Image (cartoon, rainbow, N blue to C red):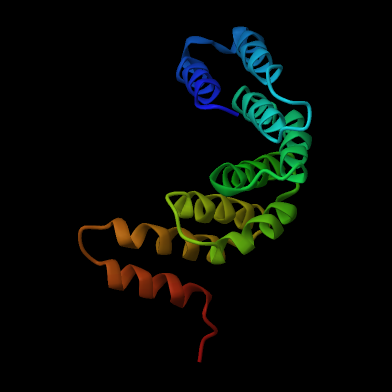
Length: 166
């Protein structure tokens, strides 16, 4: 779509906190109105609608929309966001194993500002599967570069959590 549309979507999201839970339907209607301006086959439509459902507490309604957006070819930054958010929603509806399958390849994707979100969401999915050591390793590994000191130690501890003892 064009930048004007993207700006209006950004403005809608900037107003999200103006909609208390009892008015969540009004926020979703605002997003739906913007989506109605898109071509029928645009992957942006289901992505924005999924985000709106997800952000208003309806992971179950968001999952099929995220899947649709990805199936329609949502790529790049928003595609990565969709995979992160879909994985989180899958975890919320009791399907964390699917979230792990979806996010694990993202660990090897080109690095961007979403790397830590990938690791945090994957860690939650792993924890839901009882794989807490793996999840903690991911979180410590993501945290280590942001620490003012102990980066190397924390990175080593993260690796040690999942390396076979020997």
